[in-house]
Image 1 (spheres, helix red, strand yellow):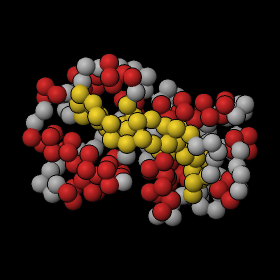
Image 2: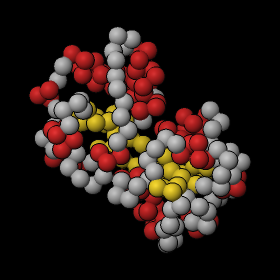
Image 3: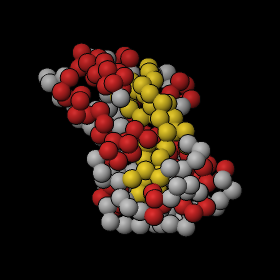
Image 4: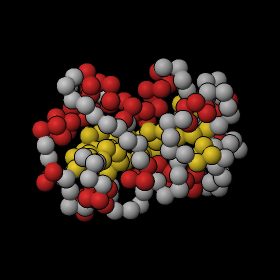
Length: 198
């Protein structure tokens, strides 16, 4: 999501300097609020929001709903199938998000709902480097639908049309209302404006 929002964000607020950190541990099944209270340099968390966000005591706001999409390198056999199945997908090598993350859980649930054993990943990573690994490899992986569509439009990967569609989560913001500043207020407003335009 950072990739989709950072460029239009800087265009809309040219005087605002932001530092983006992709830390997947924030999205694990732990207390989200710990990152805002213990890491003073962190102003807000941008990502999937679940019941933990509402119980954290911090301010939160929904930006958009998203899905999970299976993606592959351009021309991959799975991307060419008219009716791809989870059983066929399980036969390929996978790059998966780290265990315990929300996206990994959604992926595993999709396999289980299709009565298909979850394949063992060849690589586990939450890094954007997966796009580079996909370029000329047989791997399959998952991205949020908004990110997958963005890269597919650029011709960097292809989306595999799995059915039914896999719901991801409500994407939103979590921040400490007691630590708000003019810069953070601009950041919050900018994310809301950009999310509405997607």
